[in-house]
Image (tube, rainbow, N blue to C red; front, side, top):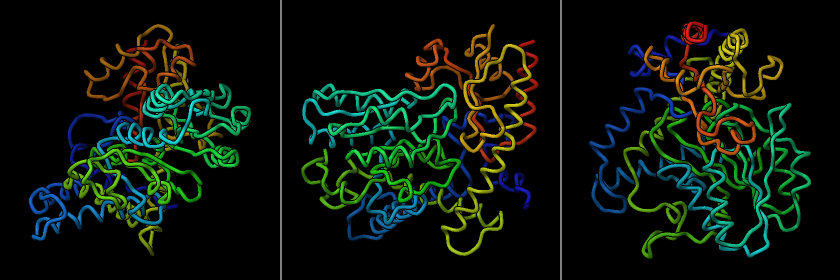
Length: 410
């Protein structure tokens, strides 16, 4: 098996040359040089609006087109016409919930989960309130730490219009069996809206294989600029009423993209897909861009989970630590390398502040997984202490935070 080229990978990320240890990756990853370069070049040469007859405008349109095509490629879509880019996943979900809700009537039902980030809960609750819909809550299994198909089945009915669920939890790291859950919902005639924000940085996503209707993610969580990304079935996106100005484009994908495009960020987004192609080449991938992207994900995931297991094993040997998620080494394939815990005597916010003073970046709190924290019976504000790994982290960094925690919790 080829050794993961961790030193070469780290050399691509300027932020990693400093003293800080970035273990805050579920909230936002660092950015490789080629993404930074693409943003800078677009600001210098394509800072115009699209639709003009002059060179800079044409360059901006090329950037816009390539960004949509690159993300369709990364997510396994058919074309860039299926991709909507916006300020954030939260903004896109509020926008789509409003468009979808126009077709639903009082008494229709939607299903949201107790595991999701609130960006895939609150928009649907607000829309349900506006439209007089019935909200069904889908729990997760405390033994498997996942949403199980058997828990979904009783909630589905002929009145179900939408299932909104996450692919991977931003707090526990659990990966849900989304393909099976999607199949059940589709058999009941419901649409499926998947939050892939925490999965896309770690696992190759294939929207065609999932069978969902929509999938959203955030490029700043997978080594890109601050943008939200929505993939949707082209026919559905064409049917949905766009909430936009009267003179907005009527064609996809522009009909659902509001205002002037952030061209420089779109350039960085396309370069993010190029980074995965580059990484695939470094780990032995060959052939098409898709093959190289798959190779990148495969090698990166294997590496990430090896150091995640080291982290989990180390945490289990610290007195007073209670892991909030899957810890069995035999079930690693059912999680991403996001590891959260609580301590019997110390507040998570205090620990996070003490680690920050040592140059170790982590998050504490509910991390917007509001319902999940409530469901676990944790303090709604203090939540958990969350450590999130990416493929640029190292064994030494894992050992460093374990050593710091042991000292702080002694």
